Length: 121
Image (cartoon, rainbow, N blue to C red; front, side, top):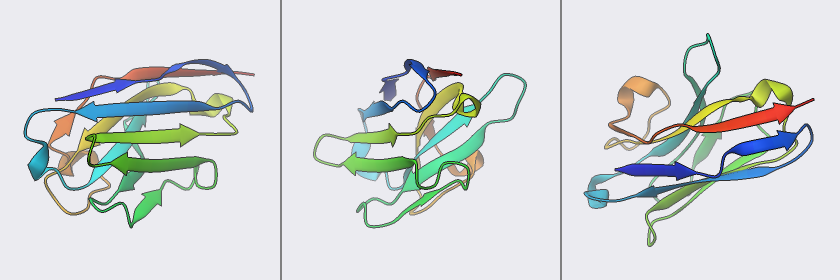
């Protein structure tokens, strides 16, 4: 299971930190990621991180503003979001994959519930 938290309302230019805690069969998890879905839009990739944390990748729209990290000892993955923009408003989902790397929703095996991020202008 994945439990996401940290969403909320923030003004443009502000910051938020999302966290996601994994429980259960965490030993089999490899890549972890964050996706987001705005109303009326498809779920889109935000960021992913490898099991070791040595490799991460970001969507172009968030690169340089967001940072993904993980703590395998605590079975958590976080997303630090800085310089937030109104277009970042969405439900954010954490996900875990049994594969070494994944950037599309279909390659993720476990999903947390969404946490809403609202950025006001």
